[in-house]
Image 1 (cartoon, rainbow, N blue to C red):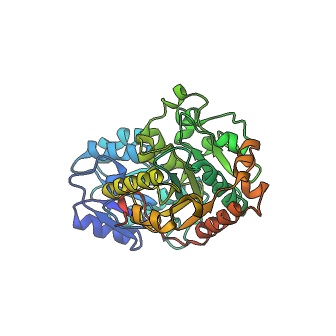
Image 2: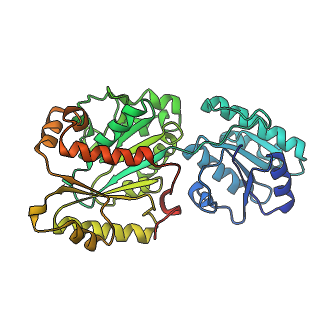
Image 3: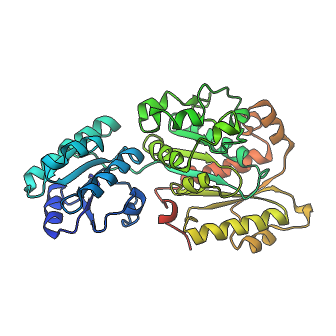
Amino acid sequence: MSNVLLATDSTDLHQRVHEASGGTCIAVPSHPLPADPSRLLALVQHETLPDILVLDASRAPQEALDLAARFDRELPGTGLVLIGDPEALALGAMRAGVRDVVDVAAGVDELRAALGRVAQGLAVRRAQPVDPVTALPIAQAPGRVLSVLSPKGGAGKTTLATNLAVGLAESAPGAVVLVDLDVQFGDVATALGLSPEYTLESVVHGASLHDPIALKTHLTLHPSGLSVICAPETPAAGDTVTPEHVSALLATLTTQFRFVVVDTAAGLGPRTLAALDHTTDPLLVTTFDVAGARGLAKEMATLRELGMLTNARQVVLNFADPRSGLSEQDVEATIRSRVDFAIPFSRAVTASLNVGEPLLTRSPRDPVAKQLKKLLGYYAGVGSRRGIGRHRAAA
């Protein structure tokens, strides 16, 4: 059944849209209307993004048009309908990417027809099955975003991100994309032996940022079936990528891929925070030393304060060595959280990075590869549990 979100203060309109949608409408207040999609979606405790957003524009038409335009840019997989004066809203609605404008006095039949038209258009764009009774698309959850995080460099984030992405892609070819978000010094391309024609800055500055079809022509393909967006070739080019670009890119990717793996830069810079707003599964990496554990403790405390540490988080202890003078329990006491996976040190990791071949395929029997397979098993086996950014935070 379709997933319809209505923003209105009118009980009567809510009842009409609810009936027209076949009982699938969820309503939130429209006064004041939030300025951006994330704040509106934060009002809804729901596991999926809305297929159709209906905005009551009868009270504040310009604010509704502005919000609709933001949805069209950042969440292009959502169909937009405005309720108001069709003549007054028509031009602005067209420019904002709105699919239909319905008079505020419209009856249930007219509303049902409008929702059906929008739903059919969405079904074509998404190649998504349509419910034969309501003519509305069957709701699908957006792709999961797995962001690999660490407070400092050298923790092995890229090794984890590339092997995780390749492993997922081998079991689901065409359903996984890896984004190198270390815009200044990212080396995903080197780790995977790729020579990309397009890199991150060319993707976010072109039409492909909001056009899924154009976007797929700008991806770099790995032999495993993985799609990759590689980091810019120079720091100067990377500086042109803004947090807003990151947010829009991930919003588009989650409509097209089952898994979006993000290799972030060290620390919590603006681009990483933008990615965390879309992250369902944070993967936190620390090294087996006092400085690494303390750094991760600070990072996790910051994420808790921001409401970005979701229940789906996983903590990886990299370069684990029982002879280092620390124990796994020492690290857990420092970070005030359990360690989910401990990965040993192996020279095979360095060798795999040097030749541009993931460890999982180059040395599948290596102890590190065996632990990586366990990590893959966790993500492949998790059901529909989700927690999007600051809106589904862990305690």
